[in-house]
Each structure stands twice: as structure tokens, then as C-alpha cells.
View 1: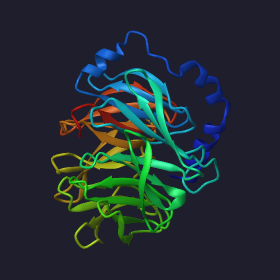
View 2: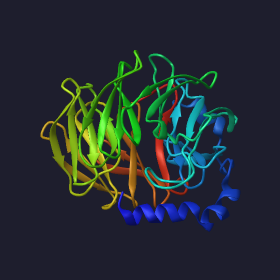
View 3: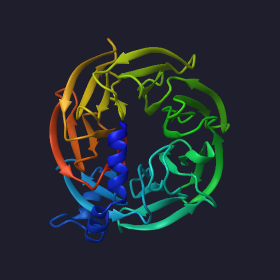
View 4: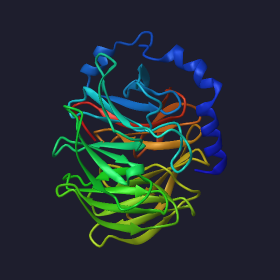
Length: 352
């Protein structure tokens, strides 16, 4: 993130716009939408509105916001969902950015998507800035990066109790991805930039891989052989071999990237280019950018649909979520979410 954008984001978070919008929007079911009908469908898209402390529920077929739910804390950046799609889990990070002053969040909240209410929480006894949350379908546990403790905390999502932690061996362990068998976890450590390799079964740190002076988001390939992370000092993506745990190559970008995710068929890697308001499409055979899609301002995070046919992008400055058709690289729809929309995830029986 550029210093100018970081400053604008921080001022907006603390400014009068939030005080004006928040009372109007919290917890409202939007006109004309049937939430129970939407939840009976194959799934919904969840979007964390960072500058409002709310969670948007979006119909991914029509591109319509169905509800906006208060998270019970300020503010959540990321979101995970239960395996059955009934609950959402939002770590309450605080009002700062990574590595900058601000409140130090200390809780993870559980939201019932049917009743649209917070129904549980786990609260740490000190500030940890919990950020990224991933539900492991193989052990049923929720893994949450806890930056200030330099750990990944493990929470039982049924009882909302802490059951363990894994050290990351690095500062600012911000984002987390898992291997598809649920055995290994990988965190992106913003500064000094690198990734930590975690054994989730033995709850052990295996390695810290240096990448750059500063990195950001992280993704894992469909075959679990590669980790990708966006360098913040140069316009490029690092490629890390999961077997050797070494950087094996770089993919050049038109500008510095942020959120990134591969398509489920393993053919493409999508990278959000915030400064250019575009998503770059990388061919993973040639390791080159082959397409660029124009989007609303500040595309930030990318999530895939379970069938792999659509990609959803949070466009933070305009407070919108956009849907892209994979392969055709066309924008299917855009819908309003909330102020500085950030994290995205799918909720439903069908999972990416």
C-alpha cells in the first residue's frame, strides 16, 4: 500500500463519514431482498467492510447486497465461514493498519447468518490484532493470524474457545493460506517480508522463507506446489517452491500488486493492482501477465466461486464488489458493499 493510500484509509476510518453512515446501515436487511431464500441457495458471498465494522451478505448470482450485519467491534478486515455456510467468523483487528498505530483488537466474533446477529466470541486477554481467519475443513478448527503475538491462534468454532497456537517466527504475520489437505499453513509476513511454513497437525513452525523487504498477500497454487506473494518494493510476484521452501522465480507486474489468488483449474493467477484499478491475469504456464481488467478504484482482495467460473474482487475506495467471468475476463456485475470493503469469502455447502 502506498503512503498516500495508507494515510487516506486511516483518516477515513477515524473521520466523520463513519459516524454518519454507521447508524443508518447497521443490521439492515435491504429492501426487496429475502435473506432466508438467499441462504437456501447454493451459497452467498461475504464481504468485510473495514471502515464500518459491518459484514455484507451478497447474492453472487444477481450481484445484490442482501444484508449488512454489525460485527460487534471495530473493525474486522477478513472473514471466514463455517463448513455448512451458517456462520461467519470475523477477527476484530482494530482501527490501525498493519505496522501503524491504532487500537489492538483482541476478539474473534461468530455471526449467525440466518438471524444476522453476533452469537459468540473468543476474546484474548490482551491485544493481538487478529487478522486473517481460515476454517480448516479437515480438522474443523479455525486458524487466525494474531500479529502482535507472532502466532497463528487455533479456535474451536463450535465453542469459541482457544485450543492452541503456532509460532510464526516473524513479525506482522498478516495473511494465511493452507494446503488443500489441511496439513500445512503459510503466513505472509509483511515486514521483513517473507513467509512462514507451519505444520498444522504438529502445531510447529517449520521454516521462515525470506522474500523481500516488504510483502503483502499470499496464495497457494491448485496443486499445492507453489506459494505466491506480492512484493511491495517492486512490481512483481514471488514464486516459492513448497518442497524446497525457496524462492524459485519472479513474475513481473505492470505495478505493485496486492491480493492474489489462483483459479481452481490451476491455469491462471489473478492479482489486484490497486494503483492502476485493474486485475492482472497471469498465465501460470508462461509466468507472464496476459490480460488486465479495468475495475472500480483500489481492487484489494480476490475470492473464487466454488465452480471456478467467477472471481469476486473487493474494490475498497469505491466500496464495491465486482464479479469477473474467468476465461472471458469480463465484469459480470458491480454492487455496493460498505466503506473500504476488504476481505471476501464464500459461505455455503459448495466451497471453493
